[in-house]
Image 1 (spheres, each protein chain N blue to C red):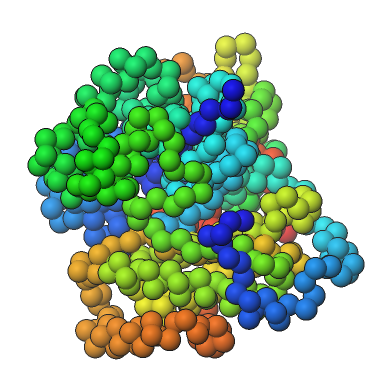
Image 2: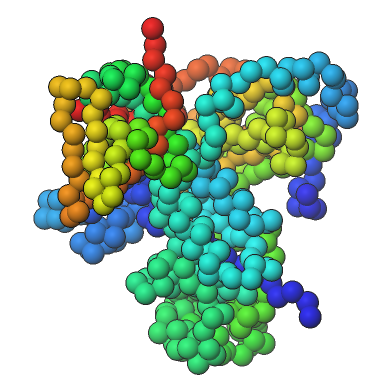
Length: 427
Length: 134
């Protein structure tokens, strides 16, 4: 019999808040929220903050009363910290499966096919990440990625399963009961707009969605929706490397055709990838508040030839301007580049995405400078296909900017700045 | 890796004459001593902390020193650890005597801390090295 496919989705609990708590234990047990770039909206909530009624994505000014009433701690986002902790977690997780797909800063899929006791493996993962990186995670296990994502939701909500839930351990009846109790919006890839359309035709629960007619749904919606239903029925349609449609971030990375050794070449590559990512960003009408750059040697190289590093930069103002993004990416790359390694892969990732319609001009940003940037970007997009040498020139202009974010409640860069290390009291 | 990753742009790849066989000198460079290799056993689980206070001078840990903390290690009796106590990170020597846990100071000006069962105490990590600037 062919080996059955199995997937696990590992998702960090309230990731940004958990990173903050690791170095500031006073935050343990208290309601805490982390705010988006420029202290705009809530992007991460502790369970206590959720209980206090803070909704995801709510603007800060709308919860001033709640904050006072419940003594909620508000923190600015610290992407240097979150990026570093994320890189550690993803690196630890690589040891638990031959195949890993990093889906976002705090989630990844692991191939669990052939793992005899998935639950035990999941528990070991949970325990290891908590001990080593200090962040609680939940593990959802199933025969498809869509089911694994759903299982992860159950692992988070249910108190009995200890953070690890295997949906295939359920009987058919139990599974359908679970589906009947869950709203269709819980399904991976079914966003708010789709939920409205589905409800309009009487599909409210995951069970109703699961039971619906494949041909009809394909006709009414799309192949993607049909595929999602197949996945809910246990038929794996999404392989490990496929990138999911929901965008919390924009990733652009490549393996090189030949090994790359020199910083100059990596700069060109990173600039090119960033230009690609920035193009996608503008196509989405979004702004990025932070970005990551990573470089890697061949993962199968001898231990002394292995090097892999990620740097995260928080931008002063969220932007879609390639020039600013490339500059920031190059300065990040220069921090992590080490001579003497044969690099096989590099990439960039845009984080903290927000809609361009929500752009708030900061004190040092004028309408004129923003519209000038827009003009340049239009021109740039037109010539983007020939990016290369030009980008290098642009990168060379970059000085060692200190990319500071305007954030009133930011925690120290505990893990990425010598000057901001956490304090161990000797008293 | 896959068709989705067509590889390094050709124009750039063509400029890489040395691709293929790295020179033997590159291998030699790799053999340079790297403090990271010596001091860090579990990269993902290792953090640097700054010491503030004098309670551990007897262990050679002074105020302002940098300590290397490995969270992957299981905390053991007599090891110097970072503990979470009353919402703070505290560096002390761990003492496990039967069921009795205490955090021992290495300076007679400070008293040892006995851990009551109910208190919210947790081992954060094990201190493996101290970097003291002269």
